[in-house]
Length: 566
Image (cartoon, rainbow, N blue to C red; front, side, top):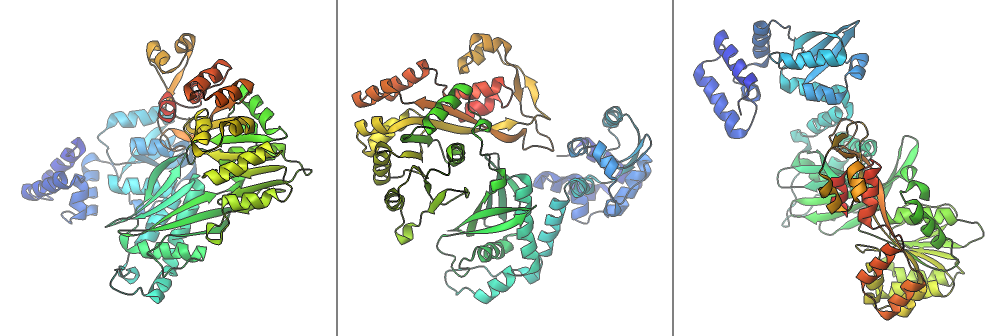
């Protein structure tokens, strides 16, 4: 697509006699065919020298050119002009003296943009000229030095000396070659930079995925996967081998999945990385989960329970025996909620044990047992062993099968307080899930005290969220009361340099279903999930949808996010 700026550049090139019409038309055709910028085509295809083009443009608009490679950032100017503004206006302040800002621009023809910057900064502008491609690169270098370093590293390891021989099924793997190449300093720096960036960005997972012609690195941030880097395909084996060496895994084995872990120290705290590798058509896929105990919230009040739900939850976890279940999809924060519950009721007088796969965070004063199915240490086997060791409170990472569920239910009935998780879509259907697994309804009604279902909803960025309007009848249709529909203030995500697409952090949505005497009668009678849910709502239970709408009213999240999660 040829923009107005490209047309102006086109006319300047012709006027200065730098290119003839035939060459210009050739560049335009390439630009349209390959969806590249007109100026990028001129420079990358060596049709026109970059310095010659910049000098011609600067002379025509009577603005001095500037070499972006030699610029040094003025910290004060950058602080007063955030990255979001620099990207939006495609302009970069390089110095500020008194009331005058020296500003690098790539489109000096847009006088309205310059006027907007004058009003925003309340300063006079002294524009200097650079090409758009160089300006954007320098904005990234000034505001995000880690990104710039990472790009340089990828260029360093992209040379022919770092090329890896592709694995095939018909040839032996050269172990010494992979060990040597993975140990090269640039690859180590590249992997370290990816890990550091993930920690800085608050990522919960790192995905390194090989494809036919590239490697894609994505971070899961606030529950959403965002693409961060695309290292060259030739680095796929070196990256996976480096991570395997860090985990102590077998780097010669690339045809079966492997699991491992390692720990690094970052900003004075220790962070665990749980690593899983899987062979794919184009190489090994590596997924790392970051377990940073310093970011773990261990206070029930901070999790997001509504006051009524928190009271009910407190009552259940302070019982002397019975079962408390936390349900929801993978990644909904179920384990965190159980850790908070254990911390809340922890006492040195109690014997508290957990069975987990794997142990995500270490809790002081709690005996934590990791599962190892290869050695025969299953949930059921570990649970049987713990029940012979005089426990008071047991947490089971997940009830995956009938055997584990049966032992857990019997433990809850025989004087132990049992916490566990299940994968169900809502709190009430957990009851039918247990009976479907084969647990007797009478046992379920006797054991279960409380079922909580939860979701994580992205939190709106407080710096860039914008108000929005919807018709009251539309709001009533999604669950607001008529009174709330008239008064609620809705906000939508926008996106800025401080967030991820308008969201920063997450809020928990809880549906808390208390199993009282009436519910126990309904379980034994075989009442439907719908009947039990209606009873729960009549007793004050907030559904997930209602919990989400409450957070919309509190201006913590968007209606769109709630509707997508509940």
